Image (cartoon, rainbow, N blue to C red; front, side):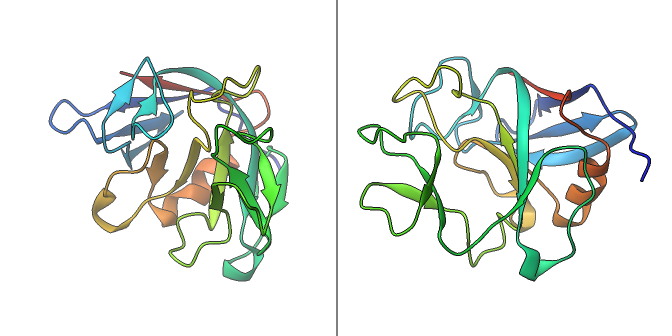
Length: 177
């Protein structure tokens, strides 16, 4: 498969609603949901804001039982029922994948609400990881009506595969405040 690789995905906040925005990848422009608190340059765990900055896209995950394997230049992993992501600042695995069951606070990657049927891992707070600066910042599927996220960026389910086809390991995401 020939892939078109976009170098930068730009996410800009709407001037009318800080919890919504527009994502542009080459000639593809999509509405998106942002964090319930809008965007911030001073991200903290639990603040509900999407971090402002320019970040690498590390990998993608998908639910194989909810659709075909997406086409993308990113490293791609299936999500399994035992997959989680630590959001506990006291956990040595903070802001990293964890196996479930997990005794500390975590996100479940295998969700019933379909938000994580396809997930792109944004390299926020990943090198070095600073406890309390935010975890599990993803580009994932939006809720109906583009309801706000907990700090992620979310797009329509029918558009995520079109986006994935355009990105690869050198693609960056830039979230503008």
